[in-house]
Length: 551
Ligand code: ADP
Image 1 (cartoon, protein in one colour):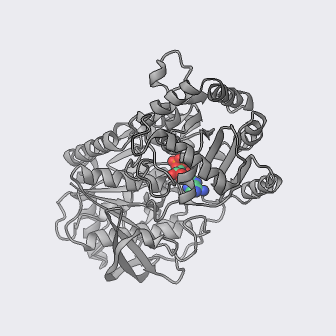
Image 2 (tube, helix red, strand yellow):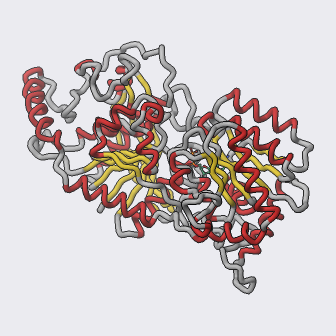
């Protein structure tokens, strides 16, 4: 099967959070299981190019029509950890991906609409269409409606499009809100559609919701854990898209994210000063006792004091979803209990960023606290390996990878019972499970009392029952959260979509024929878009200013 993943991130060369990890890990496992996989991402100026092999220009003549004007692009190819990748570099005066950042630009909507359209132009230009286009999150959600133009209907009006589109919603909070005029820029004429249409937000009249469109037009939709799939169909968890998820529940499932065990492997990780596994045999090349050397190295790098104290870690994007108040609270609580705290995080939100910088200054002389407010891949590896406990007190968490990475490194997660955290972490004291099946500590409420209860239990076990703690570490390290099973589930989804005729194809083809007849009469024949007609004039309409896009 030939699968093309189109996404905004790819670990480790262009990564902000879990999206990048998932695109890499899923691609590598699909390759291992026999599929041909390629990834398309923007050519950001801040890509870590030393991680890209065989980088070369493969196409200098790709053009994209955006907002009525034709722009050229350079397409580069390379390999990231064995995965073939295409990098799209637009030659647009706005220099969309030359900003020294991945996201958080005021024109993010333009940047990723353009990228999605150019990626599709590239896919079409290459000739043989892939079996599956797998797009991810709001950045590439517009591929759903756009993909209706994949079928070269001008030449074969009756042929249904062979490519199927699978859309994964990693984080429903970011929905890609924009205006109808933004859609026109990629050639989708929303003025021909009623506002109740699949592309328009349910709660903000006249506002386009790209993720809603992505869901409606995809052949299949997934989210990143089974529990989160249920959560997004509720009013509380759907963040305005619950009705859409319910409407399309027949083509929607939750597949638990896996971890790339080749990349996240303490037994081989080149970032670590000492490698270790769950083996308690010290004659083994990489015994568990080497985890202690990583703890020492972590203390040296972070200037934490030596001593018999557990290190509690947190690595996160510092956004409200991650439970900011609880993270702040955990710093003080850990120190009060005789532990040490390490935080690695960065925030795109200025107030939160400021608040953590204030804490950083206030704790600068504390030998038991270390905060670093940037993105550091190598330090993240050392923290996962050298810590004892790892907190994830999220308000909501679609899957969460950090608790799985922590487990892999023998670092015990303390997590809130939500989303993928609830699907993966079994509390030590859960009476429904034997100790061998447990791997962490879980709390329910977003209150400090509830959180403290879990931290206190973890500290008690670490200080008072070191043998049991060690066994808990081994339990977690030996559990399988690799991509193996999850990639099989994705393959099942891909196969299912390829075997299921599109409900909409017939209707669309009829519509297209009618449209083409009309366009021929009007002398505008040549539109490849079927379901949504090409914007006739791409005339300037003011950008909708009343809404700050969530994206
Ligand atoms: P999300 O995708 O919501 O950010 P996940 O838990 O799914 O959360 O994935 C987060 C990923 O990003 C993990 O691989 C984590 O190690 C990484 N990460 C987050 N913040 C940083 C940082 N400041 N430096 C290095 N890696 C980070």
